[in-house]
Length: 119
Image 1 (tube, rainbow, N blue to C red):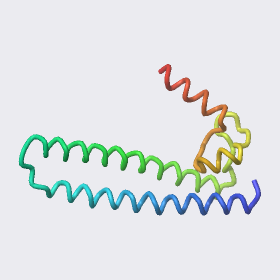
Image 2: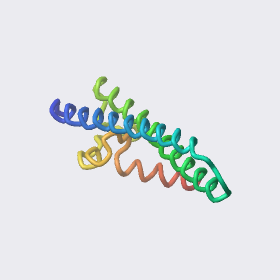
Image 3: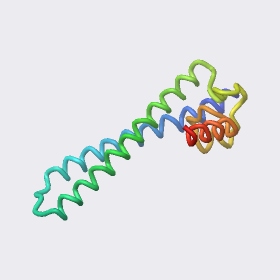
Image 4: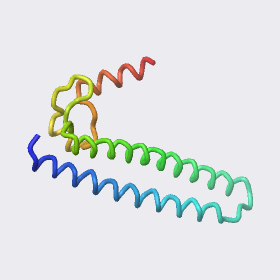
């Protein structure tokens, strides 16, 4: 992969890291605000619980994405970025543009998804 491509993807990944951290911080503030509400009845409790579960789920997913991005950035540094971890072929540019922290080419990703559905 060309140096200009690596720089392009590095910038995209770093921008995404900043956005995710901002989202997580905002969710934490929202969670604190929700916890400060005065719960008057079961309807209020249900609303607060549902909002909290959604926030926790989103935050968990975003933390996972942060780990994947950190891993992708480390691959840029060590020169292995853009190579499928399963078949060791190059991951297509279109796939990387859609998911810059992809570990697998589209064919291998489909294989992994089928295996996960079975197991």
